[in-house]
Length: 152
Image 1 (tube, rainbow, N blue to C red):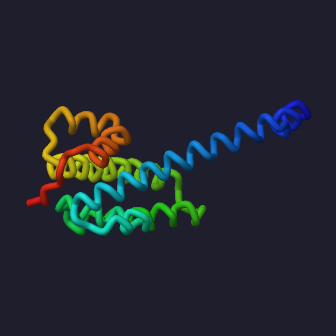
Image 2 (image 1 turned 120 degrees about the horizontal axis):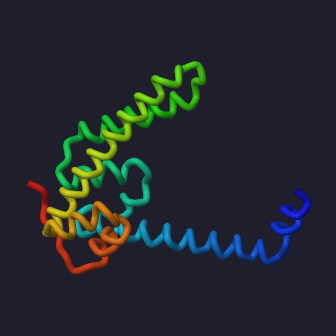
Image 3 (image 1 turned 180 degrees about the vertical axis):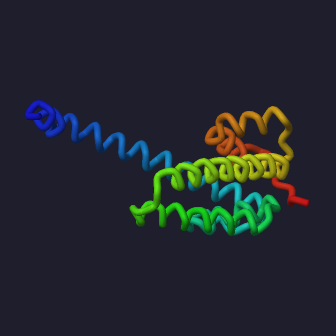
């Protein structure tokens, strides 16, 4: 135990931690700017990317997803929080609910990805890339030359 405390209390460890935190912060800022640009390309005000949960609502709205998807996601988030707060819930219920939440989230995210790619005029290859490497392809949408066409 002493070696662990000695190692992580060194100036080198402190400097490494600060560098990692700065890198993580820069990556976070990059993705906030990317979301800002996507919303701006879609004709929305970019500041909407800064507000948690509301940015998801706006993102669903610009691609033409039903409000029911967003409402269902919020209800699921609330239920998940309740599962964490109340410890008396049987494990099997949590497992079944967790699997259902995973499936719902996957379907919702796939629909959102396909719709946003369609709105930017992207084809099948880009959609597959967006599913497999969403962070990279989100940056391509944000900083690339593609234009947003309103969902039908």
